[in-house]
Length: 172
Image (cartoon, rainbow, N blue to C red):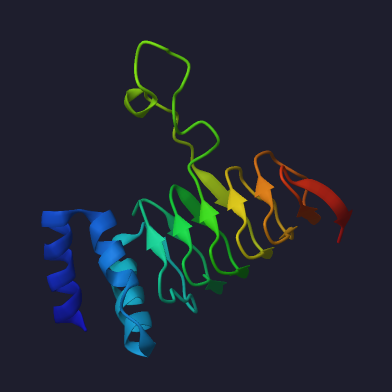
């Protein structure tokens, strides 16, 4: 495994972290879990124990922290995000770098060429995020995010959120 991770780090040097994460996301079976964990352990700022990276999980940035007992779902897409402990994430969840990652105000410059503002999103301890949610803002401790929710602002701890945009459904 050490040699394989060494070779992946060389691959990363030539093709970048995102391309390496994309490549790794396509390796199925238990071996894929082990390879991804070993590579991310060497790449992330911090990676705790008992964390799983299933098939299809893609990271766009390696300057993140992942705590203990974090279960990513298949096909998650993760940008500038730090994760606490004891987090469950369903499949197809997108974690964006804030709500303003793309500029659009100037009409004389195409939107693709306008700078945006990348933010670091924090997913605090004991959070559960449902299928197909989109996260553009930090999530406080003990919160539950319903399937298909779009979180674009902060909510108090222990909130149960749902909808587009997300609203408090009730408290835990």
